[in-house]
Length: 114
Image (cartoon, rainbow, N blue to C red; front, top):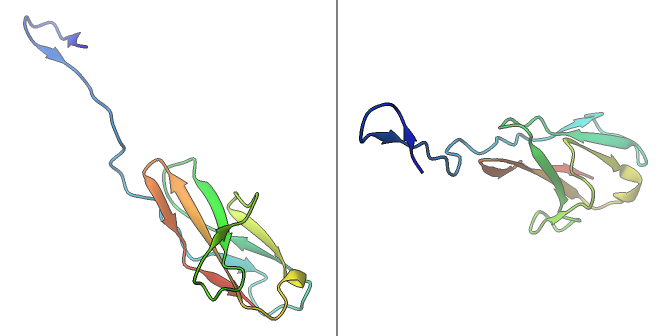
């Protein structure tokens, strides 16, 4: 395909392909409340990522594996994730979030609850 620009025998074509920008930046999530809480307290984890909107989020947990493997948390696809500490027990559970935009994806450092 060519687009004539008014000169005989000369044409221009704009080609757009894979975005060449930077992947999003996933920061360590913050927790509210941020201090030690009693069992049964609801804690909200928040991710303040930067990137090309719209950003997509997928929260993950290690289910007490010590950070050796993570699985996606079903339905946890917003910038916030609510943890009910009544279900945590005595295990240390790590949470992290994968942030995706048109340039790729990044995973935040893990935040843990115990």
